[in-house]
Length: 136
Image (cartoon, rainbow, N blue to C red):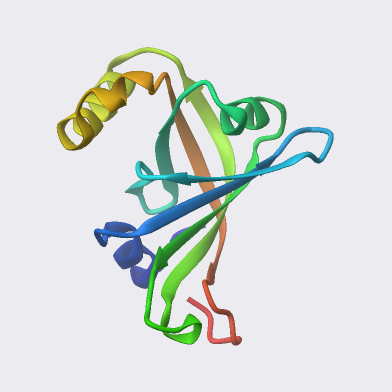
């Protein structure tokens, strides 16, 4: 699925809040805050993960949902989008992982050292954060 200009805009804004939801193959849900999701082309998002529950879930179940949030002063003023994702690849080494990690390290310093996995997702569907049938 090709993402809209609105979705591209949300993924380019900073600061923003990114919340990724995953579940294991047994349906055990997890939700976590991430700073690293990046749109790399018209239909692909990548992000870095450490050894965590999100990574374990994605190894078992490739589907995830990402909320991209720009908070407003009230719930109805909050903007953003939902992306429904499917894992394409998970890389544990290589130049793409090293490059992404270096960019993150430039922003957050040594905290980036815990990042071990580069996950590349296909965007399967997008929706507005607050969906009143307006599309995105």
